Image (cartoon, rainbow, N blue to C red; front, side, top):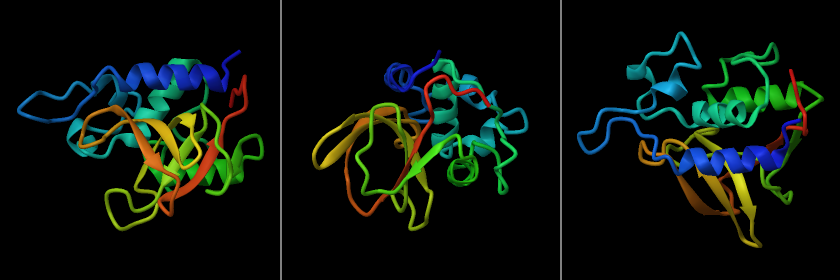
Amino acid sequence: MTTKEDLARAAREEALKCWHGTVMGLKPNIQPIIKRFPRWAMKEAEGLWCAAFVYHCCMTAGYVFPIRPKECASCNLAGCGAWEEWAKADNRIGWRGPACQPMPGDIVLFDRVFENKAHDHMGVVLENRPASIVTAEGNLGNVSGVVERPKDGHVRGYISLPDGFVY
């Protein structure tokens, strides 16, 4: 049975693998993440793969759900907004606002991190601190990594996949 702790552990491991798009003249190595979305080309994914990274972490941890649950109206789970649509429409998944206390293995959605718009970034919570969260993220300057972010107006909310969840 896959647990939130499994997701946090897998996300940390995946973030530290230094997945990357085109950076410093290097060829991208994110093909294993992008190939989970068959209609998505590397050129389209370049610089836009944080949600795909979270999906990859969920699958690596052992969760089972499709790239586009029926509750996703706008797009598949390669888009941050689809994760919120799914969480709010599927009562088996928890959606909590930014004021809640997240747990390791929760998925965090952010607003206005890289652009001045909603749902522009996401990651997996690794640790909850009094004024910040430590997250595993893809697409931090087109590279994966572990980062500490303040709990502020950029946190849109948290998604909590139940232990043992299978779509």
